[in-house]
Image (tube, rainbow, N blue to C red; front, top):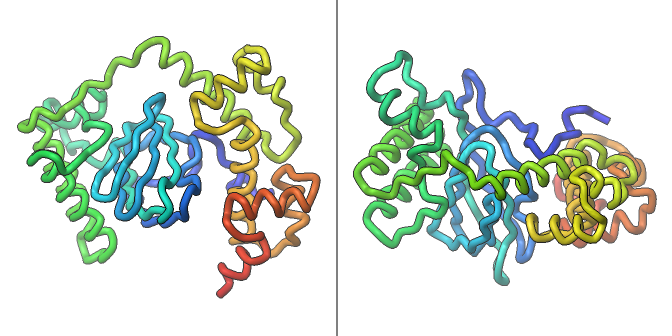
Length: 296
């Protein structure tokens, strides 16, 4: 298997780099679909819901996010979500690395604005809503960044960076700033346990994985582990494993000309009928139709 497809909970996609300092994404999902399986990345992320509603998870918090609202995700935070209601959802996401806002030299901006943000001493509220003037201003900046990323006019990268700096300035004057530099020790332990388990799943999804094997990583009894995993992710371990395998299969269907039965085996399914049934449930179509839709 292409090693680039064997990603882990710590997302392998490179959203930002030296010359490309951020990633911008427009996505659409149907009713009840998992918008994001549990994962994390070193970069920060802004997630703006354009249509519908998303039940979002950030570490141990769960809350609905409606159209016109945004979520801010600090680098390293576990996050997940799925569409609520009967209409599905659309969203825009901007993922940017810590170096995007760094000053060329250590100056007052770096000392009093950028560094506190990077250390999470001064960061954005989890949920950004248009209920007050400060929230409205932050959302206007996010919408302007979305427009810039969509049109991609010359120099749009500078517009995105400038808007992020203006958002930090808005934090300084609005009183919305949050201090998330210190995690509660109990929560931190549970999150590290979750990362360890899902990292194992996503490194070994192409072979059989027993529940006791996962429980032993923490360690817990099998029953305790299943309750722990469901409480932390909203999914059973089996549902998570199947969802991850199906998303790897979907990626392979996009980029590889292999038999569907071979792809099913490569992502850990030893029964093609079961693979097709799970694929249809998660992706809302059978794998053959998914592949045809890509080629159209």
